[in-house]
Image (cartoon, rainbow, N blue to C red; front, top):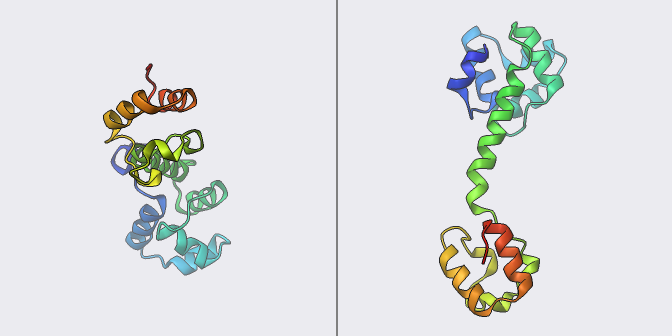
Length: 143
């Protein structure tokens, strides 16, 4: 089962579970009740609106004769992909930057990765030590 992880990397475990239950001809409501869970809870997981938790994963894996830990590995890979996709929009600690430094734009709307060169130019011209330290930390550079 773990060999499937390479193919399924980044897929929500609920989507995989939904597909497997359909292949086996099992209804999610009756399956949920058979493992002692509410159908609504299992339905939310299968729609990707709720994350898989270890106790639920163990119940499902046991009922479907899957390797222990498979669903939690899928959940971890899904979470890591979500974090990686959000990384470019990461922001520095805005409490360390005076809004007046970027007087012509909204600090919340700055794309800190795409505008890096312009941000650093303005910081060199008008920034104070606290702001320079924060952006050095954020960009992992020396000014």
